[in-house]
Image (cartoon, rainbow, N blue to C red; front, side, top):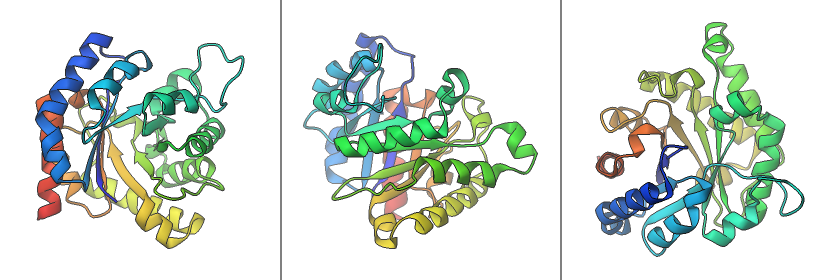
Length: 260
């Protein structure tokens, strides 16, 4: 299982800006990435930019991801994007259940579960976001909330073949706040997530096909401290992924940690 460096560009860039950023990331990272397949860089532009960014990253060591998906293959679902459409564009990964969608758009664990199933059926690797609010953490409910999200989202799910399943632990209160949890805190949650996955899937599937990454105010300055923890298999990066040198530096840090 590689270390994942996943850039979530959210609704921050125009199509032109997304293409320019993708070109710079490919220029800075593609050759290095080819030499280090144990570090997987993934960029997730808006749906509007997927086609053009796909043309930039195709054939490089940078993988294309989407920020969301609908769970049906086609039909009268105005404004939605199906897994087959993403697959046709060349998407290898897709975020589901991001905290901002849960907060602003009412996304539920049950909806996330349907999206995960649909993505795996289409041959796309899901990046399943889970995490507690500040209120839930302060009430001592961190573990129960996050493990509950994992159990619902991944019930009866199992990646097959070379498919990968990534769980992203992102404490909702840490996103965009500039204050991540401590690496030890994140590692303890990742350990619990892995133990839950082991209860739900065969051990060989968890070890070979499941990764657990951390998201929440991760940047080039602090990512090494997270990647140094064996339980943390990469980062889901928001604002810090919008500058190509910073994003690539995080991928390079992952290489350095792997070598250590």
